[in-house]
Length: 356
Ligand SMILES: [Zn+2]
Image (cartoon, rainbow, N blue to C red):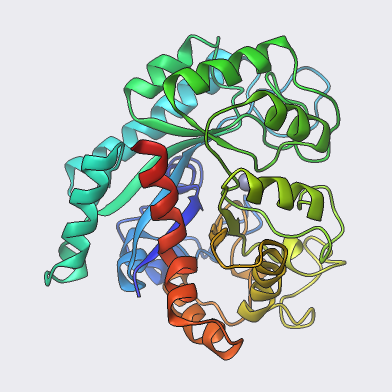
């Protein structure tokens, strides 16, 4: 089955983890055997090769670079200009992948239809580029609001104003507080440019304010349910309900600490916590029960989003194993139409509507 994954930090892996994503995952991991600079070394699950193997032909791929003010303990850049430059390096990698025929940027209805037609034909997947919609995770790197139009010009089509901690435009996960004046101006500019608001990572205060102020299209690229895993990173039922009302699609995320309660970072293991692919279906099903249908959920795996096999479902070896989901959904009683919607149809419907 064709799969769309709405959240992958591909360029971050290429540029910060130094992973050549054109290679098979086992080759990438073999090359990291001796490295200890990051906790997930040697545990990668994502590469363009594996995406093709899993028939994951369309993804939302990010640029990501945080600004940190003095005293902010999170990793990040010391000025917005440095953060901007980091995202431009990431963009250069996406462009190089396009040149190599490895990826193709999808920016509108015409390129989406062209890409879907290519994946619908008989050619072997090895010869098809992975389609990507460019998204920015955290807006810190936009030096001023005016940079958003520049970003739109190179294909940016979705934006999550926040990531972890306090942000320049909005406050994110583990943080509190409303968006400032700049954040509200950013939302207006997003509306004007028809950039999708990614509600993921908005802290509760900023979430409600953003949804009240933003009139454009909203999705949540990678979010699980707070009622199953108590933490502000997940959405409450009230938040999920308002997203459903707004026509959002919410992507299920495969980071173990967001899937099972009481995960201890660096200590827990997926096996002992009984975290498997079916655990994600609990979250997806919870959202479907709130919606009364299967039209507002999709995949937003976030695989290799600064974690690897040590912190994702134990029955997933690489991202190609997303292909195990359809049969797991059938087992839960989901219809063929539901499963097709979850695996790709809902994201495609959302995009066609947003871009029509
Ligand atoms: Zn994220």
